[in-house]
Length: 263
Image 1 (spheres, one colour):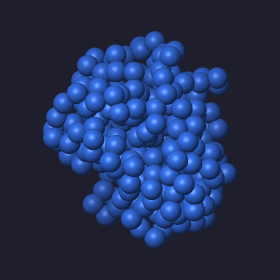
Image 2 (cartoon, one colour):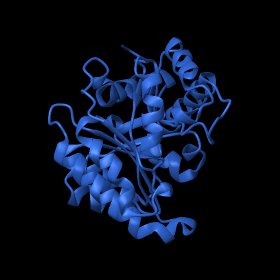
Image 3 (cartoon, one colour):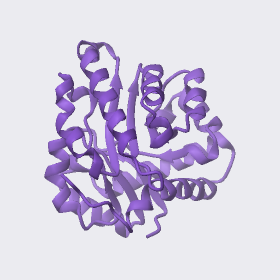
Image 4 (cartoon, one colour):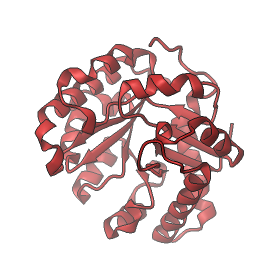
């Protein structure tokens, strides 16, 4: 299955009607990695989306939802049978610092489990949140061997230039959206990130039970493609091709041969 547009990080479960959005997206030639913020969200929407071949559904534990290290236990119980993991990560912004220790413990446990159960021929794909925490996120990915054994995509990366190149050296990919590209740093990163590490994302919708549609996703992705093209001095068609190639290599590997779920 080939797609012209790819959303490497969207909250499919937050649409008012995820199945309709998925089916409209398929008609538009849009593939997506649908991340979830807690395991129960994944469990709730997986049955409805199981037959939507353009949606790769990820089981996650967003750092905003972590209050205790044990919050990840349910996800850990299922990781061996899952291919896509996300949204996971760390957030050191002021309003989330109170849960930092629990976030870090949970993220380390999740990354360890992902590395230990990743298949060498079809490694697990991780979609990672790293707000004011890029160095620590990279420390964990390196320490747990997740950077080596999994495919790690940093969502809306906003770390320093030094952290960017460290992430590149560790093999990370980067999903860029129009909001990140609205900043000078985001546009510069879009210009210099290696071609084979570029992905596009929307991070849509912005809230649960959203009336947003597949057209909103497609429009956002087209604006992102145009912004990347401008930053790199290439054509939008070239960006479409390279993003499609990267996304298919990262995401489409399980569409035709999905792992047997154990959850």
